[in-house]
Image (tube, rainbow, N blue to C red):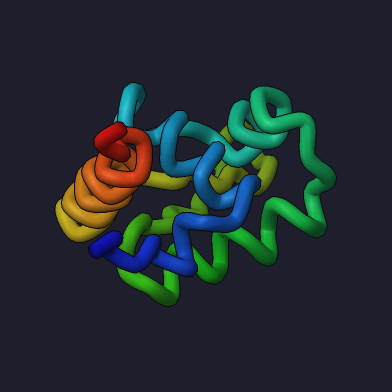
Amino acid sequence: MFKDLDPILHSQLRLAVMSLLISVKQAEFTFIKEKTNSTAGNLSAQVQKLKEAGYIEVLKEFKDNYPNTTCKITQKGIKAFEEYVKALQQYLQVKK
């Protein structure tokens, strides 16, 4: 009856990261950390899981001699997010 929810996206922090990236397409790690109010360590672990799933790309470079990490949503990530939202909508459309 109900479609299973993607366990990668079902985590609160990973879902928050994907929600941000779906609207801005890419963002610096510090921006994501600030918007999600998470710790650097926890966010780093969750970003790694999203990267391993192929939902985001992580670009590491130097900006003014400081390390800079940028996260960018992939087509696979966009599709997974859209499917997750559709599955949630099915849960909400319970007929009375």
